[in-house]
Image (cartoon, rainbow, N blue to C red; front, top):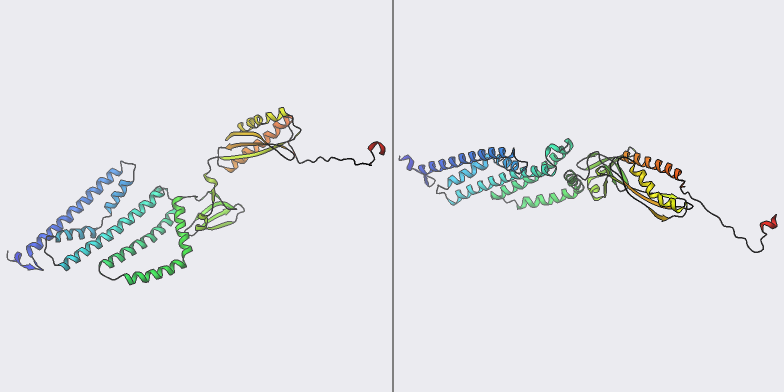
Length: 359
């Protein structure tokens, strides 16, 4: 019993044993609670459609040993009478453990945000997974660099000079690679926001083609002439992009010009004829047809209809059929299409011989 009363570092052996038992008990309880809550949340997540419970379950699963151990030791040490220096060391150890655990949770939250923005990793293409992995690597480097600086500062190491040096070097590096970094973050924006995807037909300014590859720095498009167009991602996002693959239907407006000699009663029938021809086609919805303007050599009728398919080939087939059908109907109705004509008026001046005099 005398052994239990011996004093070490200001506390008896009995007190040290009690502190150790408290720390061990707290650690055991925390481990059990972690396992129980994780199991229950996993079971709950299997029954629900939301992924928030999956996130919470993953956060619990990623609670690290060093965090539980540091918290248990710190709480167990409350039984002891420690010097201010020893208590300060324990506090710093717990703080560092919390910082590192926060970094682990931050990594989990980053993965969750990326997966949620892209609709889950099951929906990602292999190429997108590679790019997200690279971007995740960059994020983790930045995160753990920050954690390391906070840990060193908590240990009393002066990191001001180090941060200043890194800041100057970082500015120099950032200026040197600012275009690369801009394209890198633009690539992240393309991956998450998806203004276009591989296989989409896009028009950028006066360039157009099908997207073949979206990389970390550039996007490659196959032009209509067979050439490959390469866009910097940052420049691409600054442009006005027209994505024809995302069309649900096509709006077509076209003009018909008929001769001025066409009788009024036939002009009145043209909108109805056009409507019949358009509505007879598949994948087509008529909108309107009107006598729109007096042209230089034609009476102009404007017609608008919709092709209920985004496929360009389908649109061309429909428009081809409509043009042929209109040509046939107009010939049946005796309505002539106009073509450029000129009428010359000759005026006889004074003193000029008349046609009778010439005879």
